[in-house]
Length: 155
Image (cartoon, rainbow, N blue to C red; front, side):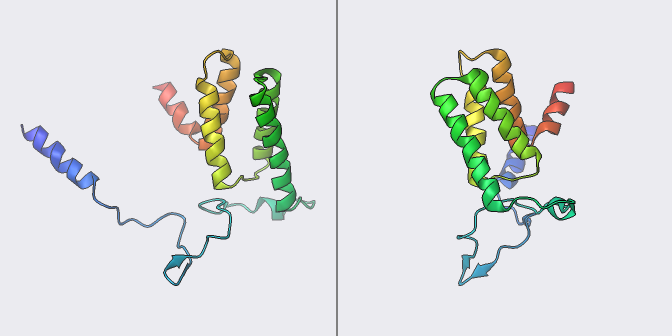
């Protein structure tokens, strides 16, 4: 009975609002409203290493990066709508993975939609297991839990 009381006591504290600060820092406020409504949500925290400024060559600007991402997403959408998982969606998944490996970041909304898409693709019935595994791998990359999932697999 004491265990049940301590669990209830613990659960009571779990529903309280956390007073911890966000790791993203402070939000600029203007007239009591958040001042980030016009800017696309990129990263919660800035990168610790300035990749683009240390390269010995110029990199494309943000507009060009977003155009390239839009093209990749458009082709991925076409492949999925046509049920062309192999090689179509697999190819554009590889292109997206390459784009992400260049340390380019999609907006937060794009990342959320991609996570939802790859989750659905990984669990979709009738898809080849090898292809489904590639989609699951992309899902894990997008949610950035690769290290945690490896720890779970090793247990």
